[in-house]
Image (tube, rainbow, N blue to C red):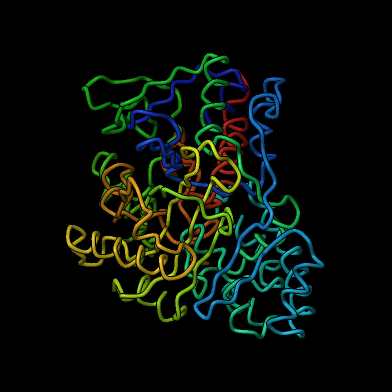
Length: 483
């Protein structure tokens, strides 16, 4: 949607095809029994990226949606009953850090300064820059090495933070974009400063309301939208794409195509003779060498009462951390224990549930479909274990108050979003799958086929996805100019 708006602002005639029945991709909205749920992203950390899209047409985002700054940003709940509120107030932050380990106050300040330096390079300088040539990567290598980006997020955090619980708190961000903190490049520690710079926001009405506002903007600007339209393949003439063939058999002609489908799926399923030709040309990463993000089990439910002590965003830690992530990412094991992200939008916007009730979703990282897991059997079991664990801790008596529950597992991400192996965030954000090593924003062989979204540079998460549209705008301006 961001790419469509940017292309329209350049003067192009734009048609957007969406295989689902509603716009937004993974940012769908579910309604069950009076409870509303955002199905996808719920954390907004760089609202200016949305503001830019409206400013392209002389409009203001604030005229159509209301963004609310959250406090706390996240509440962390540990298995021993302790809590930590990650918030904007530095005095409150330092007081809480001191309760875990006073020496880590200085360590956090040093971590934040390191994050600022990485942010100024990784986000300010590089997030909207294409990496089409290896020399583009080489040009940035010295300063990336100087900033320690060859480290992992966990090792960067452990350099400054000594308390084991706080190490978890400050290492959690890669999991929100599909990465294991113990293998994700420390470039992603820039999120610490990004959050401190802009805060964490919620759009009243949910992310679905933000999608609706963008859809209305596209309509006002003459972008044609085709819902329920699945692209089966690209139509190629030499080294150019001349259109796409949709499921009905119709061909939509185009001078250029911008694709936000999962790149591994695109090259294997939507490109003629993709496997051998794309592997040989380097356009497709070899499957045996590709690391995919984890899968997601997402449980949606309402409750017949409210839980006012539960924050808008809660990270619920089990006993294990490193070995649990090894089970999920490396061993493909669905363990009996878990850690959870709990979203309670009714903490900020009561319209998500009937009066006197709450709306929730719980996101549980699980192995992707490379693992041999029978989700018909394991889905109900995992649902019951999650409900039982929350009922014993942050949502007392949940087993009796839960209403209208349903869930998504990795099969839904594969089937609904055509995500390879049902990975929640496309390929994982390791160092060797970042920048030039990630899927390029323009195909190396087809010079009018572009990529946006989680699987291409700069990566997953709302800031990354919206920045990928800025990268493509830069490339199209260079190649075609404004029409």
